[in-house]
Amino acid sequence: MSKKLRVLSFAMFLALFIFFTLSACGGIRYSQVSPSAGDFHPKTIGVLPVDVGTYGEARGVADQIISGILVEKGWFSDVASPERVRSQMAYNADLRKAVVDYLTKLKTVNFSDPELSKKIGEYYKIDAFLIVNVDFWNYTTQGKDKVAKVGFAAKLVDAETGKIMWEAGHHEVKDLKQNLEPNWQLFAKMSIFDEDFRFLMLPLPLTLNAEP
Image (cartoon, rainbow, N blue to C red; front, side):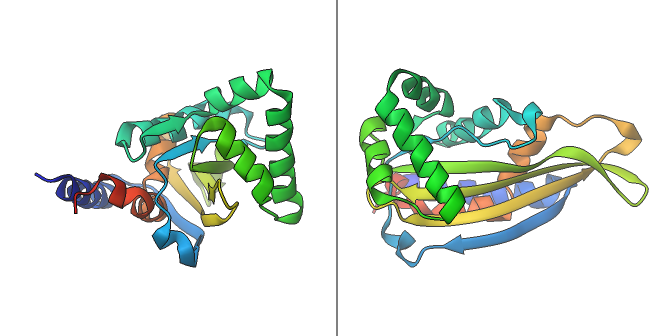
């Protein structure tokens, strides 16, 4: 089987897997793809440390989930994990400042600084980097039912130009039958593989693994 067919077969399997196995509800909260995304084919990617916000229990776990998926699926020739990103920032003050300044500008004035993104890309030798926020990671109630809720927001940045190639937000809600605690790591991983993240994560690097 050609690489192209293997990739397409995986996408079909994933769609069926999600349709038949996910008992959770939820969905896409927003989704936007850059018009130039079709010409963007990153071979290497970095994952900046996930911003867990007030959900401290997700710290570290979310990092492992996101980078683990990218490594496992083989969409990129190299994945700079959040641990690797964080470790190198600790020993390089200029790099640390570049990452912090970039994220601060993005968060406060919604500006993806091309000079800083290029510096980040050159240092880590990556074509793109992923910025992920945890929007939900908690228990809540819906009516009389106790539920677990997981949600992520993500941006994929072209390191060379600073352009945000896509951004999306997605969440899943799982009913807790008999008050059983969910496997948070598995639940979060499944939420990433729902409609939005499958659509956005697969097409960009798809041609890298496909034979002509």
